[in-house]
Image (cartoon, rainbow, N blue to C red):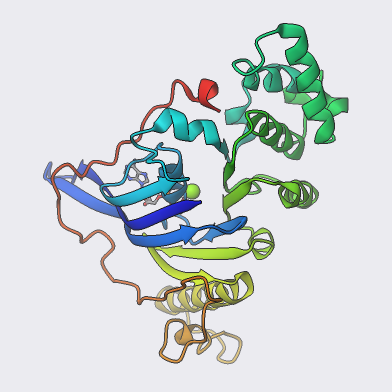
Length: 305
Ligand SMILES: Nc1ncnc2c1ncn2[C@@H]1O[C@H](COP(=O)(O)OP(=O)(O)O)[C@@H](O)[C@H]1O
Ligand SMILES: [Mg+2]
C-alpha cells in the first residue's frame, strides 16, 4: 500500500540572471494506492517519474508525506528498497552483468550466500519467467523485450512486495510490449507503472492522471483514459490553431475536451477521484526554505533490490 498525503516536490535552481528559483514539480498529491495494479499517465514532464521516485526514496518530498507499507522511504530507504523493485525505461541501464543468469545471481547475492545454490535458484527463476533458454546468452544479443523481461526477473528475484515500472514499454516494439504486459498480468506484487502506453494503462485497476505536477484525474482506467485523450486532443488542437493555418472544422474533438473537469462530470470510478482545473503557472509556487528535492545517487541500489 502506498500513501501520498499532500505531497509537494520543489527543486531549487538559478535563472539566467543568477537569481535563485524554486520550481514545483509536484503539488498537492493525495492518493492511497491499495489496488493491485495502478497506472500513472500524463504528458512528458508532467511529473510521473518524480512521483514514482518518491516511492523508493530516489526523490524526497519537500512537504507532505509518502508512506510505503507504513514506512517513510526518505527515512527508511534501505528497508523500503528491499520491498520495492524498480524497472526502468531502458533495461540497458539496469542490466550490468554479461548474461541473464549472472544478472539474476547478482540479485540473489545477499539472500543466497552459497554459489552453487545461487546458480540453481537463478536458473529456476529464469525458468519461471520463460527465460531459461536465454540464461547464458550475452545480454547484448537479447531483444529489447527480452532485456526488459530479464530486468523484471532480476527485480523479482529480490522478492519485493511492490514493483515500480517507469515507462517500461516505451522503447519496445508491439510484440515485446505485448510480452511485457502479459508478464505484468502475472505479477502477484502490487504494480505501479507510469506509461504513455494507453493499452497497458487500460489493463490496470486504476489510473492516475498527472498534469503539470498535479493529480487531475483518478479512477477507472476506461474513464480516465477517455478524458485524457479528449484533453490532449483539445490541447493539440489549440496549439495547432495558435501556430498553424486554421484546420477544417468538424474533424476535431473540440467540445469533448471542454467537458473535462466541467461541472456535472460523471464519477471517477469510486476510488477517491478528483478533477481540478489546471493552473496556468506551473512554476509559480514561490521559494521555500529547505525545499530542495534531493535526487539521491544510488550507489547501494544493487544491494537493496
Ligand atoms: N532533479 C530535478 N531537478 C530539476 N527539475 C527536475 C528534476 N527532476 C525532474 N525535473 C523536472 O520536473 C518535471 C517533471 O519531470 P518528470 O517527473 O521526469 O516528468 P515525466 O516523467 O512525467 O516526464 C520536468 O519538467 C523535469 O524537467
Ligand atoms: Mg518520466
